[in-house]
Length: 529
Ligand code: AMP
Image 1: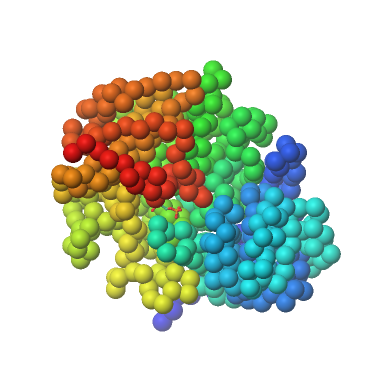
Image 2: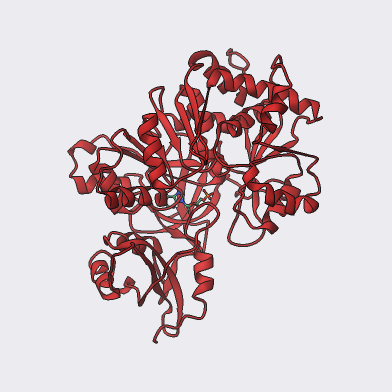
């Protein structure tokens, strides 16, 4: 016997229909690179997306076909999210910062038929066009091209219907080895994830939120903001230039109260405000962060400014939010330090996601949630990946557990604490050293702009930590001072054997510290045995 509720397929078009109907005049603002701004709203966006549905049909795009974008954050890019998925196609957001080789591989692997791109990436397009074997149509977002393309249609169209399990978005994630892998989101997985994301206990997004997602639209579903903001009628502000002075100006001008970005964004924003002798923008009430560990010192600064931090952990493969550090029932009774500790951890599983840690060498052995034992983090749930796009086999075990490649411990109260990436842990004398904890402790020094710890081969201990540090402009700190600072904060045998000061630490295409490049750079580094 089935239940007796209505038959609704959970598709992305429900979100934009809802936003247009219930929050039609709520704005979507874009600040372009030249500083000019353009404005639309949810109702207009729906109209434009329907025109795009017609325009795609005219190009012969059919259900399941891939429509790619190579673009930064802006309103027309958002139109393409709803336009492509509303046409039953799969929107493939490509990261323009990838190497040529990867850009060629992923567009061909995805079999993209259309590419819509920013004129800023015209050079990439011209260069790679001969190698992209499946793209038939190139449309530029700027120079009036995209507007003319959809503007030729009347918008009298219907969304393409289908199953909620149809694919909806495609996003490639570059692992540390091999070719990038495609994560194929479904309409249903996105909608379920949206419900979870807007919970007060999660990102606490609501109709009063005026959100600036600094995270790129090509990264991990844009942390779900295009969907979640539509669900609650939030105002969305997009901006291509993430220079902190520009962000501060935009925040003030648009009354932004909600900002989402990786820790480096928060670091540069707090450092900018400190250097200018000004407080953090007072309108900001909500901060979402994730993608990398957020240093405790930055969390403290935001909390002192009265900002509620939603520190999330997730990955492209988990749509992306899986856990979030929300306030437990006794949060107000805690000391400030205890509260910071809660926020510095990666939080608890959202309803819909399950977590466990298993032995690094033996995944069949589940480890206790004792706050001490760390192991390989595994997750499962309806918005967690089962198989990579075109993968030959599932990448989950028989019980659907997906190995995240992260190393973590789980505290008795259920809070998750990431200690490393499986590939980044430093193994010294058979014991694990968390590079993340060393980095967090180091960036607490006022003269440290950024820090990264990597393992260096050691004749006796196998590996020992090297701390690589970027100093803040005009400030100084010595290796000894840093070692002193770390003493007491981490176990004595974790203290880095050496500290190297550099001008810049390499970052990945998504703005994270690239340990792979750093290890390569220090490949021949020798520690005294
Ligand atoms: P991506 O798929 O590019 O979003 O990368 C996901 C990876 O980023 C995760 O597997 C973690 O290694 C890392 N990550 C995400 N969120 C956090 C966080 N809050 N703290 C530490 N690392 C994180």
